[in-house]
Length: 376
Length: 214
Image (cartoon, rainbow over all chains, first blue to last red; front, side, top):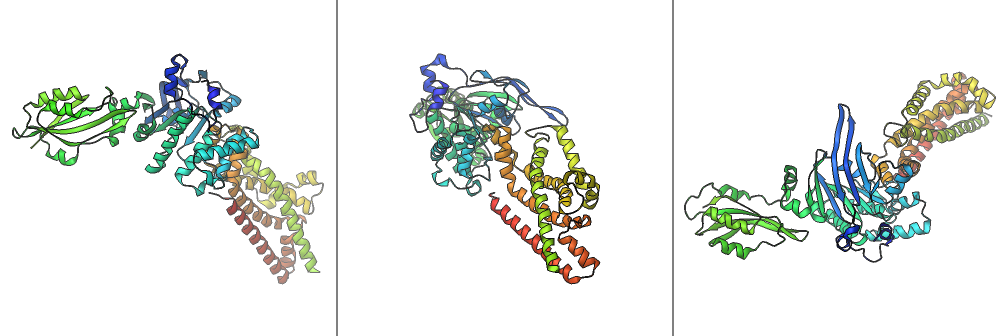
């Protein structure tokens, strides 16, 4: 399906095939939707130039939900803003649909920006305009005739579930409703790309879920490419297909979300993931001893499943391999992109096997395993 | 008899302030927009224009109105053909109040969240669209408030215009009340001025409040 045909799809029309299916159908037709080539950005600070981005090389595929994560100041904002040229790169190139946007003038930039929607952390709605007028504004400045504007605005407000709020002003809305207006406004030109700048960071957890659900639905129904930046791993887990981890303006890790979650390589990724991970419970930690007190002591094993084999943890195989009593101290499995990732903290007692041998056997069933210690 | 004079004074004040304020409004808003958008990081960034215009505004704002009025006499003659009367007062009043109002409007425009400008750019607004659809509507409550202050200041200044025979309420209070010790006239004028200022302030505040949707 060509880009123009995709744009021509009405919101209420047939579902756009999901990007993954398209890739399988036409592997030769795939080229990166957005491509960064050796991108750099330097700010002039009071104490000389400050590099914000360095040597960024990335391909973002059509129809995928692409996450950019990093701590504050890592350069996420600058990077996402080079896509619609709110930020001008200092070096390197940005290609959109294989076109270099580097030397665009005001006319071509305006046309480009109408093909790229953007939503913001603080919503950035016009306070003096009603919900309706806010969503209508991008069409109005583009000179779209009134009848067409009305149809489109009504359609989008219905899509985001704000039918009853046409005449409300942003100040009368909740955070989640404001972001829905932002989404409607961003989609009003049927863009091919949606940029999300910390779109859920100012929202409470429940509202975050509903906004992420809406974004996922939009991605599936309209087949548009979503590029989002966030500092919350939970957001990435919820909706992204692929993720890059940015630190000090450089890409330090990238891959499918399940891979980065299951087996983070870089320190920053691990730090960002820490709040989501099952830490060792304090009471177990307190009872843990480095050496067995007697031969009845249980071995505490930490098994990690990274999802790389695409299988679920096989508990019966695990238990029969250990040959003893196995109790589950702590742990859990979550599914990301259809893969089971997780930690299991097991205490094994009355096994004829040594700790070393238990570990060897555990490694046949889990991607990573270690002996944490012993409990009496 | 003195009631007629008083009535004439009210008309003169309204005329002076009315005409000058409309011109100040029409010149001040574009001036404020240029001052804001030509500044560093503005959408029409032009540092030289910004500096020159800023200096010009500051000069006119620092000259006391009475001095400005006298200094402008040749210019006034050039524009309205006379240096005496209501129309001669309109020129210095306009020239004094335009920079004053422009500065106040500039502050309101500058307070518009930069995120809104960014959002407008991201949705494909041209720079003039941003001025028209974002900056001005968002700053409107503040601009209305600023215009109210300008009006009150102009009523104040217009009293001084009596010195060039422009008439108006201030002039009557000065000539009849102060120079002829006619307390009754002076008190009447003061009451009228208080009412006038109160009505303007109240009306301005109401309008600003109604426009403010934040």
